[in-house]
Length: 365
Image (tube, rainbow, N blue to C red; front, top):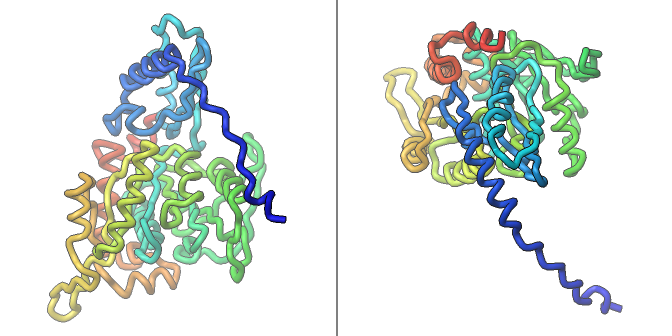
C-alpha cells in the first residue's frame, strides 16, 4: 500500500542551454544602465536596486524601474541610455512608484524585541519636528502596534474613492499619516494569514493607500527575513533600509542576515540604530551597558555601515509608547529625543543635501 509513496519521481528535463547572444545582450544592457546615476545618493540605479525584472526578449528590452515620486525623470534617462543599442528595437520601462511618496525607507531588525517599532515611531516624530511630512506603513504582521504608540484609537479601515480608484484612507496621529495591517483584524485575534493571502494584503497596502504628499514613508517591517519582508522589499521602491539592533552578540548575528537579504536585492542599508545601548543613572549620570556594549560599532566596522545613533534604555520611552505619545514629542529635550533628532537630521541631509525639506518637496514641481 506504500508503493506509491516511494515511487521514483520523474527525471526533470535538463535546463535549456544558455543563449550566448541573449547573455551578451543582457550584459550590454546592464553596463549601459550602470551609467545612469541617481543624483541624490550618487550611485547607479543598478547598484541601488532600482532596476528589477530585467528581460531581453528578441530585440526588445523589458524592465521595472522602482522610484520615488521625485525620481520620475529617471525613466527618460534609462530609455536614452539604451537607445544607442543597434539591436534594440524598443525598451519597455514599467515605472513602479508609490503615488505622493518621495522617499520610502524600510525599518528592519534581525529579531523581535529590539525596539524596531518604537524606533520607527520616534524617528517619524523627529522627522516631523524637522518639518518633513511623514507616513508610517505598519507592516509588522507579528506585532502591528504603531497606531497604539501614536494614540490612534482602534478603528475600521476606511475606503475612499480617488481618481486612481478605491484607496485606503490613512489615519492620523501627531501629524503622522498611518496605515497598519493591525486594522484588518480584531484586536484579540492573531493575523494568521498564509502566504498567498499575506502577499495580496501587503501588496494592496503598498499600492492602494491614499497617502497625502509625503516626504518620507517609513515601512515598519516584521522582524527577520521571511515571506512578508521579501514581498515588501520586492514590491516597493525602497530607497534604503535602517537596521535596529541591541548591543548583544545574539542580536548582531540576526542583523547580519537581514543586511545580507537587503544586499541581495540591491537595497542599500543606510545605517544602524543601536537601541538599549546603556542605562544612565538619574543621580550621578554614570552609564551602565545593561545588554553589553560595542555591538553597533562592531557591525559598523565589519560591514561598513554607519552607526547613526545609540539610544539609551529609558523607562519613559516605554511609558510613551503605552500612553500613545512618543517620547520624542512628549520630552523633546530628553537624551533619547536628541538621538532620534540626530538620525532624522542625517536622513534629511542625505536626501536633501542642504537640509532643506522644501527643496525635497519642490524637486518634482
